[in-house]
Image (cartoon, rainbow, N blue to C red; front, side, top):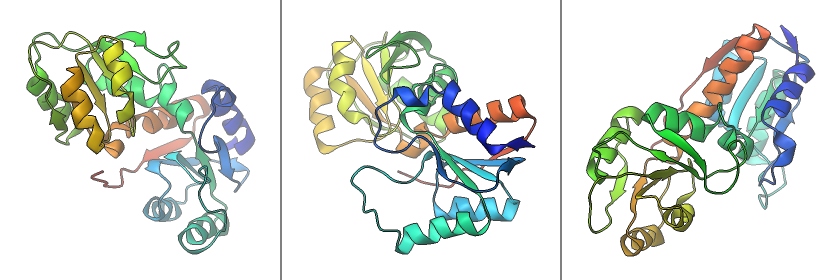
Length: 253
């Protein structure tokens, strides 16, 4: 068992949370019990995840997508009230990290996605490792766009939507950023990538990919961001000797 404040401080420090300008609050979002022995992690603090936390008697819920986003309604009513009431009634802490968990050099979503896909990491196009969000690397030799799409689908257990650029050929450099980063496609092309992987796709993304000449793979927002929070949860378990369990709430988007 560990004191909540020590656990939060360790996460804040490890993820350099104060160094990011974000769309939400990074760190402790809802205060519960000051003692933590069980951490339940998931991608999003939805009601289903909270119900799992109650059933498992978790003391802290750790997520990538928490609450209190920029420009969202501030009133605690309806769905938001039910979620927060669930946490407060059972004294469950809610700990959330958004961009800091995308960027971390070893525990982050991009780091974990690259590792699982077997990419050799060159660095980031938009900053140092641990700060940047657009990662660059090299895939396994001999992969073309369809081969890369097949590999991504097998690893993530979700078939990506592939927009093939004209020309084809072997992919020598790949860029990736998990989640809703489809508009980084131009920066990926400027960095010399032959293919760019993210989570979502917009109508404009197809035209950009075709006209710039860069393959685009929309591999799922949820599917690409399942791994950072798991890595952080395991890091906490190892450091503090507490229990950690990840729950994957099905989400096709």
